[in-house]
Image 1 (cartoon, rainbow, N blue to C red):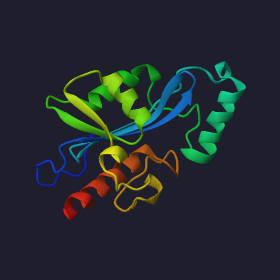
Image 2 (image 1 turned 120 degrees about the vertical axis):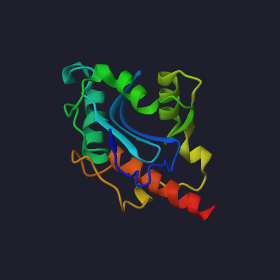
Image 3 (image 1 turned 45 degrees about the vertical axis):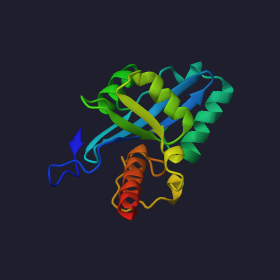
Length: 175
């Protein structure tokens, strides 16, 4: 974890932003990449290995994985930093702390998956676009003062977590 924005020592954002890039194969919801920005300063980012070998996928699933790699997030099935067996533990450690918090994600399916995985009353998982009606598509959010992980050029969970945080910061200034 890297403390990248904490200049004064005080958190400027007391909640968490979780951005997840996934592969969805019936009936599986497979996390490929996750970025967690906690309190606006503490960053965690992982790219997970696949949970099953490529040859176990159906022709349809292989086609879908190839489409995601080519047109959406650019991560190949075999791209990895961390074994898939560590998904639950690492995401839980990145999101949970001693205090109660609100966790913002984009997308109802990801909200449900994360809430089920964390399974705690100390965390409230909210869908950002349901909580804030004026949030734009990630494609349209300003990418100034963001970074990418270097593994792909588009739909990077790391960059998108920063885009959401920057939008949230500007949104708070307008209130």
